[in-house]
Length: 233
Image (cartoon, rainbow, N blue to C red; front, side, top):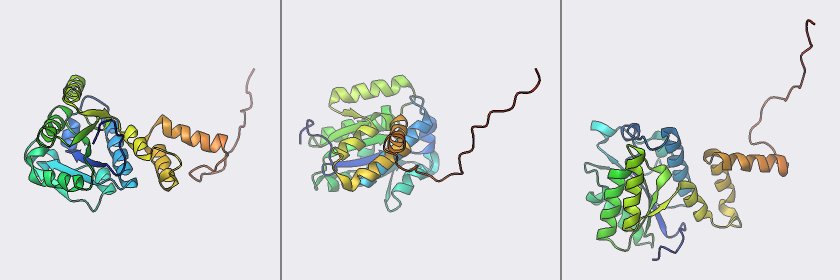
């Protein structure tokens, strides 16, 4: 499989590594609420396109805490692969899950994890060393490090080793590829409205102000304007 081949729902799988509260509390490379928004947006994208998704955690009960509930709510049926090692590749359950998906042609592994400089880097380098057919796509804005430098230099190190940096919205739109794919069109635009910030706001504006579509929500009647009467001199 070539790195020049774009991501598709058929050639991809997704792994979330240690998206847990204690890990998130250590993130200083980006706003943590934005991080969680992007993680959940990526999860919903995978759900839309039926991309197999692995959730793995480290030391849940002794240190890291439970996976973000908003992430688990997207995949309530998924098993959670618990580990002791900071490197997910050290866990056989993780290797087996990845290999099972790879037998279906899903050798492009999309990764979003905490922290970039530890759990993401060690996993990416180890996986690519042991299984050269694997291609790692690191979702930079759904991963976080303990400082801006920690995140940046970990991303640089991985890119130098052959990891491909992406963003969560890039993954979403690469999977969609063509707006003529109507079977996912509505779900993708709805996801963008909810999680894509200015892009989503722009979709709402275009729909309602340019194309005269109905607003997404019902609300009370619009009253006014009603300029206040002048008082005094």
